[in-house]
Image (cartoon, rainbow, N blue to C red; front, side, top):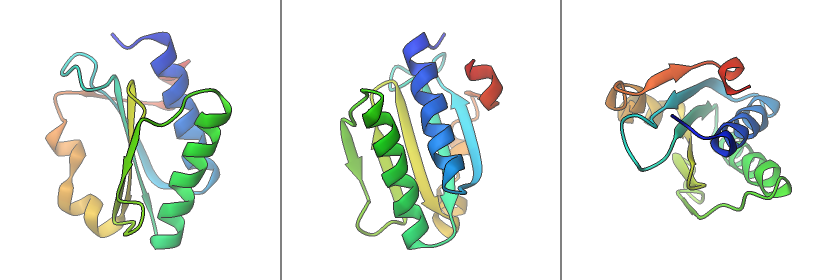
Length: 119
């Protein structure tokens, strides 16, 4: 079961993505399936600039709340930006790469949850 801090982080990330008009934001609770993280948050942007703006806003909002990013990959190309916060991992894709990598299918053993479940 995901801990309280992970829920707060996931909610902040979700809201940061929502604020910048991310497409199809999905939260997968993977806490029962792996020790990698408690949540994956997956979202898409419509172009390179939006994908980077989504990642920037997640980093800014979580940073303001005192949750520094541990590692990030893919920012320059902005096909798939992976942001590792330890308890949560945020994936921001362009639409083509999201379809190609299909993390929702790969992590189907996790439980897709709604933003409201992060209360």
